[in-house]
Amino acid sequence: MAETTVAEVMAELSALEDPRARAVNEKHGDDHGVNLGELRALAKRLKTQQELARRLWETGDTAARLLALLVCRPKAFARDELDAMLREARTPKVHDWLVNYVVKKSPFAEELRLAWSADPDPVVASAGWALTTERVARTPEGLDLAALLDVVEAEMRTAPDRLQWAMNHCLAQIGIDHPEHRARAIDIGERLGVLKDYPTPRNCTSPFAPVWITEVVRRRAAG
Image (cartoon, rainbow, N blue to C red):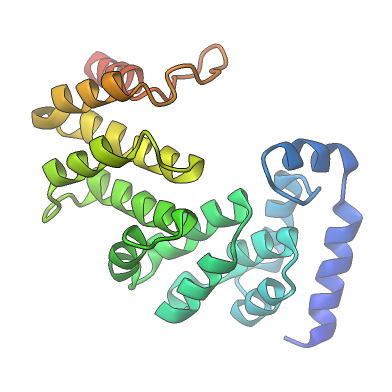
């Protein structure tokens, strides 16, 4: 794609900028003001364009990077390229979309899961835990779930926020999907008390692991 195409896309993103959306997004650490519905509509119109995606990412602009993740071809990225992208993705939405929309579909997902989970950077480590949670839910064969619970029990309470959130999700997923570990997962959640007082809107499930596990299991049983 010609550079002018990137310029045209950036102009469209600029035209979509909404101060009210920016104010809401900035409360969550995301420095852009583009409505995500509008962003998805633009991505649908552009369709898959891998080179455009790479150039949009290179701008460093948060809205452009989110759009890049919607129009890219996930399996086209090299392992080291994905690693570099994750380390550059410091806003929560870019980080989440990169992991969920791109890395999870990559042939390097398992290799990166192992590398990132042990990374000293807690933001990078949180991506490794997100990939582990995906495996707990979808392909748990080969995972040592008891060992994962050991790590959660030892480290989750004092982990930085984003890493703590990712560990807590893994804890809940183990309890939800693996009945043989459910009692221990609930016990760990009760003793650590992580996210126990998290403000939860009406009709939403609390992220506090014992409540989360119990509620999802109840719903599944109810059919």
